[in-house]
Amino acid sequence: MTGHATQAPKGPAAAPAALRRQGLRRRLGWALALVGLMGLAVLLSLTFGARDVTRSDILAALSGQVDTMAQAAVASRIPRTILAALAGGALGLAGAVMQGLTRNPLADPGILGVNAGAALAVVIGLAWFGIDSAGLYIWTAIAGAGLTACGVYLIASLGPGGATPLKLALSGAATTAALSSLTTAVVLPRGDIAGLVQSWLVGGVGGATTDQILPVLPFLAAGLVLSLAAARRLNLLALGEEAAAGLGENVMAARLMAALGAVLLCGAATAACGPIGFVGLVVPHLARLVLGVDYRWILPASALGGAVLLTLADVLGRLIARPAELDVGIVTAFVGAPVFIWIVRRKKVSAL
Picture 1 (spheres, rainbow, N blue to C red):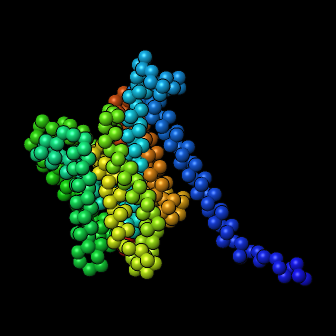
Picture 2: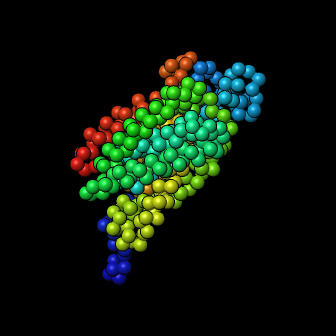
Picture 3: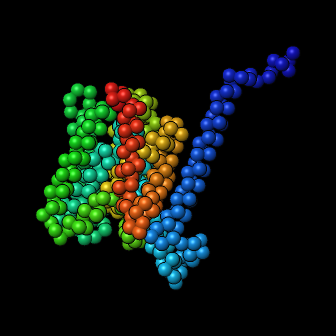
């Protein structure tokens, strides 16, 4: 009798722990799969292009040898692959942060106008102020991204109900259209910079060099740290501002911290590659579908998933138009537009 009385209860009491272990194993499995996909994407990026190469060419180029045309081709693809991974990771992470901040399933650096603001700032800097250094490019892009984010939020806050997800999406779309038109108006009279700017505005990683990558690394690192550090706060904000404040969270500080991280990521990525859309929309949705709603998992998965998506999109752009290539910004638009339509159809407009 005594033995039976002291046994720990089974069934319902043990179920939550078992479910947590099962959820953790599933998430770790997806995380390992993302790491494997990243490795595959890097290998494909180094292998395919106008000239296909062999594994020995890749190993030789990675060791610094450029004795043959194939090895030289691999050497030129290394910085391109690094930039695609960095920019994709930055945009995927920034999109996840923006969706968490606004509780808006349509939030994305492109849709909310942040990329367009960064692009307009850089174009104005080139056309009117003659900026010519990497540091000025990056700071100008970050300033444009930050001002646009503030402007979109203020516009959406007007009227009853405040900045609802639907109003944010509409305000961002209108702002993007207006800023894109202004960018065109600034570029058209300047034939001396029109070719360079129009190519940059498409968004691409072709021709990337180490000198192009190194200046953005501190900004991407700062944005990464701020964004990942905001994961727990985003989980609280998902409960609602009143609930987060009731749990002791400083809502304004949490919003500012996460927003600054997203702006740094968007501005640096746009300065390096031009405005690239839909990465920050597609990747966080996929991460949320497979990993659940915990931003401690969503944010790193979105960063890694964004790197995978942009790297593979760059590879696809090289293959479908060989020996020429499509810029990665065009490829992501083809991939992202159907996903955007699916999200809108999946979410009732009244519930946005």
